[in-house]
Length: 106
Image 1 (cartoon, rainbow, N blue to C red):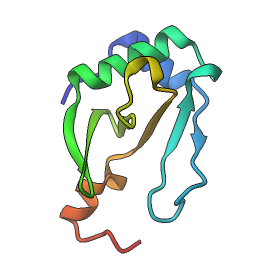
Image 2: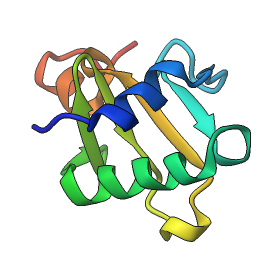
Image 3: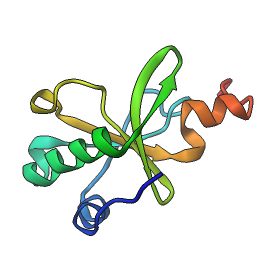
Image 4: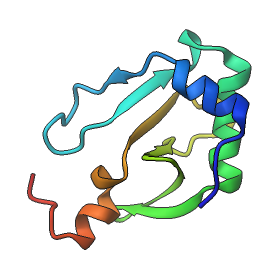
């Protein structure tokens, strides 16, 4: 587990994250959209997740996650130039955490 560099931590702290309305009770998370934030910092965040993150699961799908403080960040794996969304949730809301704690029934 790493940590976000100061400029990316500031970016994630100051960005306006939107609560995802899809699956709010089963998989609560929030996201930012590339065209609504600083594009250079968005791309830098995506690269950071992909380079320094770890491969985890969401059911059968492999996802690259990056954990910083109490948040876990991920994208859906499209090439960087096509990535438009970065997601995040608390560690307790990740699939792997909930699977390990028998908490997938929500």
